[in-house]
Image 1 (cartoon, one colour):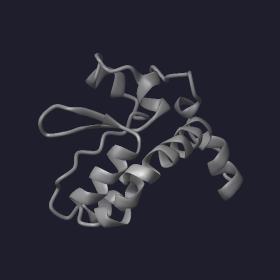
Image 2 (cartoon, helix red, strand yellow):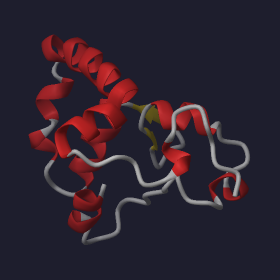
Image 3 (cartoon, one colour):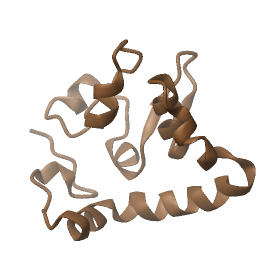
Image 4 (cartoon, helix red, strand yellow):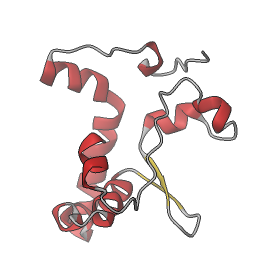
Length: 116
């Protein structure tokens, strides 16, 4: 997300950290568990999108959507979405295997929202 935020020179995106201690207070109507399970986005018209649709639209908003456009092509979309679902479910383990670093926050534990 840091890379995306850096590219957002015209503030087209509002990025919200669901791990922040006051998230549940600021957004009481949102289901933290659902948000933690996969990425969510809200279009200007109020439409809720998830998964790779969010990824593509976010990067498109900052001018490099073409990099992610193939993930939305009809023949690739279903396979990419299936891979994303596996990644989203196991992202903490995958991140650890790739970086050797464990999560630094207790809120990141799937199914354990932090109500600090």
